[in-house]
Amino acid sequence: MLRTTRSAMIVLAGLAVTIGALESIPFPALPLLQRELGLDPAQAGLLSTTLIITSAITMPIVAKIADDRGGRRTLLVLTWCIVAGAVLSAFATTFPVILLGQLLQGLGGGILPVSFVVARELFTDSTPVAVGWLTGLFTVGTGLGVLASGPLADAFSRQWMFLLPALIVAAVALVAPLVLPSRTRTRTGPPDWMGGALLALTLAVLMLALYAAALVLLALALVLGAGWVLVERRSAHPMVDLHVLRTRGVWTASVMAGALGASYSATYFLVPQLLSTPRFGATPSDISLYLLPTVVVAIVVGPLSGLLVRRAGARTVVVTGLALTATGTLFLAVWHSAPWQIVVGMLVTLGLGVGTASTATYTSVIASVQESNTGVASATCGIARAIGAALGVQVAAALLTSSPSDATFRLGFLLAAAVVLLPLALVRGVPGDRSLRVVPTMAE
Image (cartoon, rainbow, N blue to C red; front, side):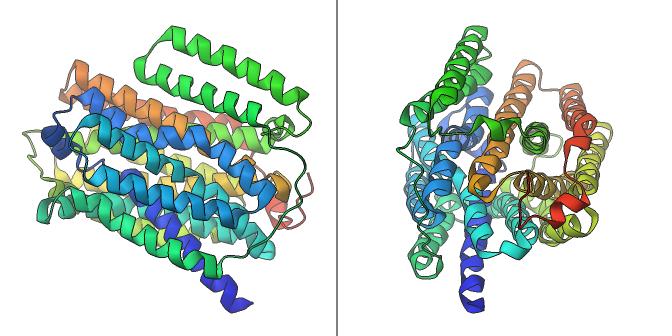
């Protein structure tokens, strides 16, 4: 049994790292992709967020399927969607084609909440630690994607930025059926396809509204969202149990995840653009090298965050992570005239802050619900993070499009720091030490 769980955890860890890498790979190479595909800053912003947007749209549906029918089969389907999307992105020669590839890869965004479902089945007595490892490794993967994409693009071609992760995911997909538990769950009833379709449409219109900055689309998203709530309230077997969304630990964690996503995605977008300006003239390899210390720190801090949550409680770790993220971003706002200053700011923001806060956020939301709602609750956090990330990148791209100056970069970093500090007002809604120590029983 120990060998089986260890092998399953290796598979889940491999997927977490690779998904994180695929999500961040376009960022260091955005200047290169812009040149080769003829993209303007707005198109580059959309390209860097398409995967995140698709994840937000499909994540709750995928997570619900995993909650109701087990995570193994769902994971296997998602892995092959990722492989197809990565291959399409690698060989794309036009903007619409690479956008479609990123859309397919985005279907794999649900792997993280689905992995939480599998991990909770396997590690009943140590769920916070398992979640900490997976979220930490996802953060590590994000850093590795940033680190590896530049050298791969410079030494070989941009195709290998996408093909190498695709090969890793394909290898994991072949091994996964042999080691992941096949647990059949009792179906509560027919799938709520109407609720799922309305939710997906609502999120799609909302993301489009954020991209186009269109108030009409935002109003339409609100109308569709209201219709979705009515359908879910009347459904005998809703796609998303609205009682779960009203749980204090769920909605507070989701707000924090949204703010964190907006802050770090804006920073991730701004830094490569800043380094590629004539002042620095950095190549994709240079950008990846500057971010190497951040990745090294994330490799250490990410997996340890689950242990910190178990010892100190999610509330303490969330506050620490948000404060570190804001501190690093404020540092970048004031000091960004030399490469070492950017290295230090990113190390604190992404190496220490984001990994710590992300782990505590996901752990706290899982501690707030019963096991049967693990996927949906964690997907709610994922959706909030994706919406925040899309909004953060689009605001940063809009700033650079209007006036790509030093003052613009400073304003972008200041906004990112302000956003991540706002959720501190809700920190009392995060479960404390005692809640996390009774995770296996999940008393609501």
